[in-house]
Length: 456
Image (tube, rainbow, N blue to C red; front, top):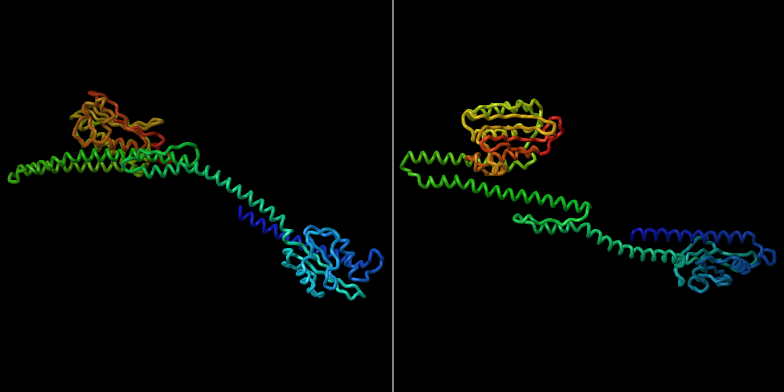
């Protein structure tokens, strides 16, 4: 507003100055027109004196606003307008002396003078009449200060209104921006309160603007972080507990080993290596689970389900003598990560092998419907107790009933992580004494090969 006001003021002032020069030029032209006629209205003859000529022209000329007129004869004021004028040039001796010093031969053009009347823009027209030795000057002047007064008054009003507007806009803007940025302030305060031990702080959100949406997004991010940190702490606690057991076993046997007894040394060595192998497998499985949340954990590509199922069965038959069967075979090209899906199915197969005996049935199968793709492993083992149906998918969880065992407790957690990375889930169907069926259910819009991409 300041720049606009100053620019407009300067432009308007230049227009006023240009208007003054135009008015001076018009006055000079009117003077010359009158001089060309050269007729005294009282006598009807030509003028015989400079004084009479100047008297007549001043009587005929009515000064404009902010204009002053004076006629000089031999350097002294001789005639002034008969009407009241805004600028009385005859009252400023300094200006009259400056005008008198303008040579008769000088070009008639606008000049500027600083006087006791203020800044004046004026012209001096020399006057002479044949036969009269007197020297005359016709002076027309406009007051810069009076001409600019209206412009100054207008822009003083503009400045006052602009100042009030700026204050009003500032107050309203402060209130509005303060309200809009309130969630950001709360976001900063919440971020300062949050630590790795307390992620419970949230931002109070109201409204539907972009900043409110940002606050909601941050709240959702904090929810995910809280869940992730809680899961990390639980995993570390469980891992520490599970790894402490083999370390304690190894330490206990090493402390009690009889170094002079070769048989005792060999037995302790075998036991320590076995426990170390178990710890190695546990660490590998923990690494897999840690990678499960990474975007590149699964890398889908078109896969023939029938061929993938054949590979799983070929690998599974070498694990144990069981009655291996294929329940169903889907001949379809799906968009999957073959390595991760094979890993999940083999984990389910190894779980089935653990809880079945020689000759028991272990079956695999695949089925593609319009909405879902199912890949399963079924066995005729002891089944799963109802109270363990959900818990066995947690880290280091082991069933207390039919699905007990000595595994690390991470296998089914890995299977669930692989299914969720494919935007799917693992479903358990089975009751104690009737075997168990673990099914990977993957959404068809993710699994079909004609889809453009897979999230995850």
